[in-house]
Image (tube, rainbow, N blue to C red; front, side, top):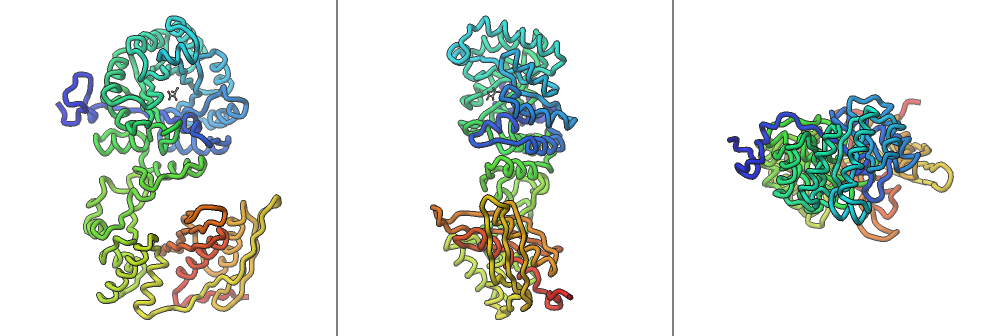
Length: 514
Ligand SMILES: CC(C)C(=O)C(=O)O
């Protein structure tokens, strides 16, 4: 027996490293969109679906056709993309829901029928026998319309298991392609997941749909696979009702890293997570597994030193595997090795004594609860080495106007003593001001804004905000932060400071030729 058997030698489990193919059904566009406050436009759904397809997701549940005409338009946008993935709609146990799904041109339906007494009697108000009968008729109807059909027993983890077997067995007998065990309220412990999925997998192909209310969604998905499930439902970033669905990227990396089982294209994971965070407005927690900002960032002296000696010292797998890069951050736990590495990155040479002083000053900033950016480090290094340079790019003035008309902004900069003024429009005042600053600087140097991030430091409408940006120019990267009570001013100041750092080559002429 393999060492990789969950629950030891429980007769109902199979070794995860011997499971062969495991498919993914992504429900970011349906269960993910059911997270409070999330509403995706047709363009959002089309962009996300394209990315999911590029990441080799097998089935994309594009929405619930019964929601209304707007939702049907978004599902149709996805079906028109002609993706490799099977595209489905969620349908309640109502014939009209299947008709509405057919109008959207889907390949299949995820037919949800009640499974627990609570759902059958108190929610739907039917009997167990009628529920089986209507499920059979709905499956036959959907199959007669050439649809791929998965039948999901809602609240399956709280259902009577004998009844769940009867219901889903009848669905398979009526022609359903697969059945799904749903832990609708994230209530199951791993042993309950094992018991249910093992029994259902005796009937035919089984999917698993787990929620994270007990923080067990990934565990229960893995246990389900060990018990016989061969398709996992989930969302990217784990968004979804309440505490969310299982995060597919976490299941994917656990299967790959722990058991050598391949599922989705892992190198697409980070871009996908970023896109979904942006479009749904649900940010990624910094400590989120796989895709959080800190997942491959090392700050403490001991970890940075270890990582510089051996990349794998404090990482289970390399960041490139999931489309990311490793970062070494500076803060109160910084050590000499980390600071030296950061200085090397910016080609700054210092003596041992100067390094000690720089480390001390970096720690002081960290002790005040602040992150130490590249710009902070370079300013400290300039002061400690006595090589303070005159600024070459400075912000002289900024005006931004927003209201019911298109937001506009103008900025006035000094570049090597020459005054530059530009105006621009944007999607908001910050965007307009950043566009204006970019226009004023573009005669100077081609730089790219890589990252932009805002944090409110205090509460209230007069909150201080810190804007952190990362810019690159050729091979040079610089991270800069600026704090202000005005978010537009903080953004432009950060951008101008970053440019000032990126154009310090002494031989470069910044004044435009007229
Ligand atoms: C599959 C369906 C009904 C679902 O979202 C759930 O049970 O959580």
